Image 1 (cartoon, rainbow, N blue to C red):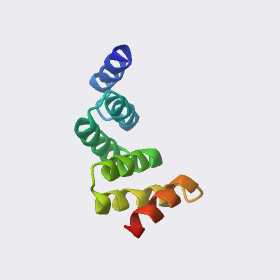
Image 2 (image 1 turned 30 degrees about the horizontal axis):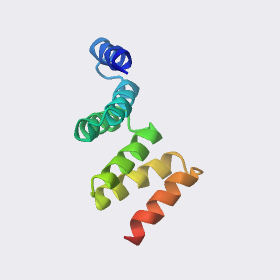
Image 3 (image 1 turned 30 degrees about the vertical axis):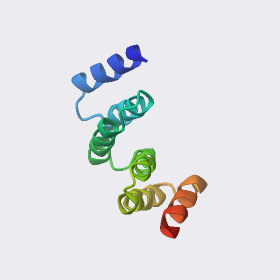
Length: 99
């Protein structure tokens, strides 16, 4: 895991506007139990490259885990605009709207 973190951080140093690198860093940070840091990194990835649907999806999941339901909804909607045939996205948005 540490090797993967180092590699992704190196990619960000080399190409600081590469949204996908921030997305992968967010995934790794979640895996090592750092959700607040992952949240910041996902937000950076979404800002740099808004057309990465899974950034919004993962950000929505993380916001849900942190109890930020309205913010999660705000992430699932752009994810579904980018990827309208993604059943998990529709499922998660529906679940959040029921709360």
